[in-house]
Length: 200
Image 1 (cartoon, rainbow, N blue to C red):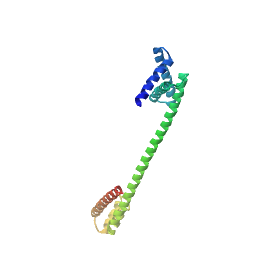
Image 2: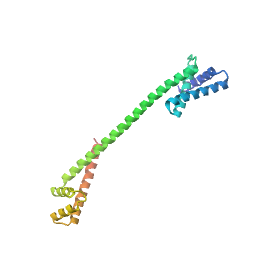
Image 3: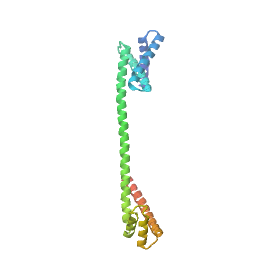
Image 4: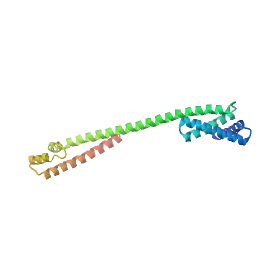
């Protein structure tokens, strides 16, 4: 099928050159001049030299095929411009669809990423609460109180240590152990929930 179309195009180009001029050299010159004019016409409307050159060649191939099919073309140049306009319209429609498809694909990627991030945050928050609840009331109360005034409230932490009857260093060590336990619990919780999500 492809070979027959190619043969038709070659035969059509022969007809096209004969219609442009009976002299082979002048016909070739007129062909390339027409190609150049079509390229400029399309480039002015498309703004892209590479695509306009390709579309101009496709225009003359189409005209050649029409001639090979027996189309009675009175004015080659006027007919070529008509074909070029039709191809340009099709090109623009395709470009719009491709652009819309790209935007839709990008939007879907963004939505999936946002959904994944939201799920991840929800899982992390749920695991954080789960692990806090898994602590004994005494430890849970201690770590909540320890961070209630912020990370750098030294006076408050000294006051809390004094209240518990231990040094600030001992308090810091106790908090570190609780934090380690919470961290391990949280990591296990997130891993279990992710594995469960994969098997859903």
